[in-house]
Length: 321
Image (cartoon, rainbow, N blue to C red):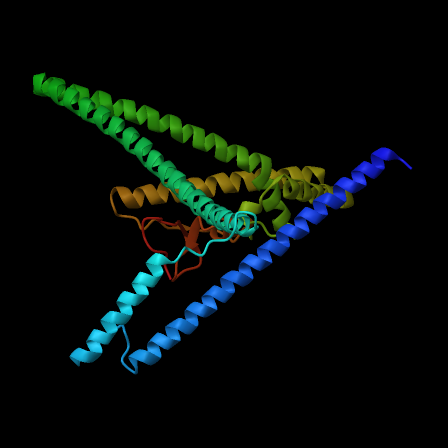
């Protein structure tokens, strides 16, 4: 037999015996405490019987009954003061259980507090982020307004020092500069528009004119894939009918028609806004895929009284019914 194992086994049995004895002592202490509480309960019931129906919580109306109440209360306080507190023995596990329960309660309350604090912290961080964003925006606005105010003051000072001829010359110079900048922007827009017609729109309009897919049902959907599809459609028609030269002429005609129609609509719109003599409408020679595209894309609209007349949509006004 292994002596070490024998020693370990004896040690385990000793620990178990000590633990059992501690549990027994705890039970004895609890039973003793329970018996004491029961005795106190019986004593309280006897006191209530001696008082009668008059509760101690309320003073009795009769002097004799009130005196008995005071004697009972005095005896109860004297008995409580003379008696030892009902505490469990240090050898029992009652203090440990009480400490464990208190620790568990504190841990639960701490976890709940952590969750609440974390939520409050997230809310505070979000509010801080919003406030910082608002502060940055306000700072940018302040800088912009201060810069604009400085410029206006500088211009006002310069204008106050100028004569009428100098003011007129400066105004003409400013207008010419703005006109040049506007012309540059218009040129960029025209170049982009012409590129769009050359690269995408002309082929799709030619395809629609020859019975292919309708252009403009979803203007935002004009992409490279639809462009390749329409180009393949035209190529197929050319291969089947051997009309490559005709297809080229058709594309050129569509490009010319789109540019001409757009230019006419712009000129009519500018004329309407300028002297007010025109109504902004252009009389159409025929219906075409280009006309239908402009209408479907909400760029132009027909006259409500004559479908042969077309004008650009004035985005500053409500659409005609």
